Image (cartoon, rainbow, N blue to C red; front, side, top):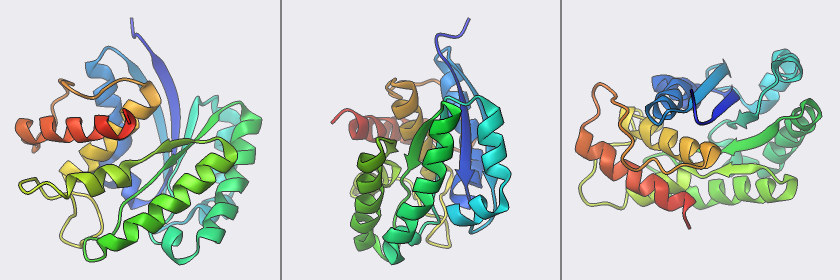
Length: 212
């Protein structure tokens, strides 16, 4: 029997869909004897406002009996228009709370060619999370710390934006640690194409972000 079971709805774009991030989190949970049932609403390049305007997400939130709804904003909006991002999150937060679920904010990362923008992304997510009492998933901060390591697997794909498998794995470890409240260190889940030594280093960085 699973030690803990969560139902999570992920809403975002390719930063969430790439490498099937929700399924990666589910595999991490399974390796520890936990369970994650998940659904994903995604569209390429979509902002939260685009999802809201379509109306599909609200219906699923109301009917889904989720424990958490994980929101991922369009990756450059926190830099270009944090006010708009705040408005988008507030729309969803009201619907999420009305359903009995909790809002979680999946903080993404800076483009490879513009690492200095991570602070703006971090500030935007942190500020709105504090305002509404949401759970903050600081994947972008974990990326920033990991990229400081002299020898490491690449986190950015060739487009300098989307995640490689290692990049998604780092995000998955942070999501798992935050939402399940369990350290990803020594997690035995195996992902084809990810070197075990890289996985160990990634787990350590992920855990430090939620253990501070």
